[in-house]
Length: 315
Image (cartoon, rainbow, N blue to C red; front, top):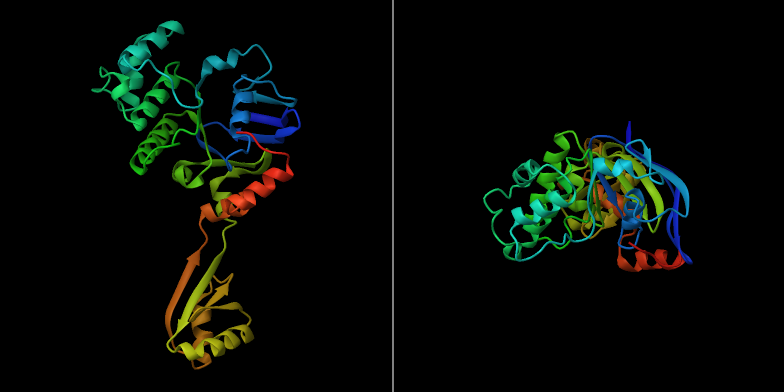
């Protein structure tokens, strides 16, 4: 069974097309990254899946149940949307106990979730003393209270320092290994790619990719960077490699051989055949982050231009 499935899911806010006919099928189990630049409609999509706002058109199911039904599926879903809100003067345990009582959940879940997120031993301290990372973990603990099959986290690493990001990433992986489906949104792929099994990439409401991380990695390209022993040989090296059938370009005092990630040995032989000694030969693979930027835009100017063409953007 799919954890989440949508067909033509669309949401408009006046003239702004926030989510544009998104059709996805997200498998159950593992960590799913919902990624895209700021203003791409990630939060709008999450709110539709949680029944917080209604789609303008299209349909979606969560854990096999329609989002426009009676909302019974929400008992099987935990969510952290925006920054978690707690009573600052109360302890983590008191906050979670209050939430469990309000929702009619077993109080035994409080100890269980505190242990899962690593707050046991700090649970009787007032929340106002917690770091941002600890507050995020407490927010995840609150989302885990109903022991959900699906956990939805909207920008859980936002504002965290590198150590806090690593903590949350480690926690996401542990939760997925328990058999849950964890959907986590982020505008920075690098923050979550290490734990993702599946990716959904959207850009200003439009679906760009949905599928396994491994399949997206197959889109990466490689090139070989070479440097001759003598800088005066760069032009001759470019000519020799081009005649041998390589696509090349001069870069400073070296040469870049495009699309040759698996042909480094051939590049070395062709240079030697031309009587040119190489002092550097390095294969460079494009990262998943670079592929993501190719899909979504490499800088703020490019992203802003795309957002303007689509009439603005929302989170």
